[in-house]
Length: 305
Image 1 (cartoon, rainbow, N blue to C red):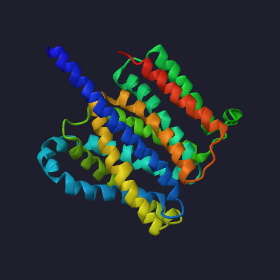
Image 2: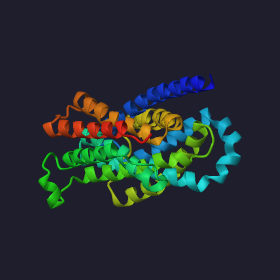
Image 3: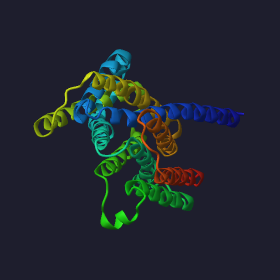
């Protein structure tokens, strides 16, 4: 009897996690579009800073009570939370928005498909979570898709080490977000909103030096009207809604299974880039998309029991 109840609960948790993660990836797909719309409208590091400042303000309203109640637990984990917020939020988004200045929204979306691969490999090295033969094959297929998009369909560029700078930035960003996803396995036992409040706070503080450096060494662009609109949208969708939903999704089904849903990001991003940015969808984009999705499909089918 108890086993049946547990099974029903597990199915319910999975369905809830699936819904949360689909909405999450839709918001992240929007982020690829917004990153391109931000070019020429606001400096990338300033966008990162204002984005997390906006989230901190929202969380101060919606999670103030949870923050106070869980402060004794969170205080013990502040160094860990600071590293997580700085890597997964600040550094990831800094590279993400910088990448938009030299690569397309379609490329940004497709390359995010590398995140689940980094999660699988990182989980093996850090927690010895077994990688099966099918997962290994899936990793290889996904990497081929990443190489295809990074080389614009000309794999001979790999031998010449000729990569688009924006694509390299995106791969580094994916690595950092995968590290953050794995780190959620050791998250403090507190509600998602309370944890996210501290992650966002550290992300905002970590972004301040980047804004100073950008203002000193790069052309600084204060937000235009369109720039402010981008700030509002990235604050609400990929920053506030998506991050809370992602934390809850990882809590329900774990980082490995949750990471697989990142593969919806390139699908959503590619569709929206064609519709809203009038970007052309080339043959190599389609090949790369199929390889990335197919590789992660193999990894999910072959996941260790």
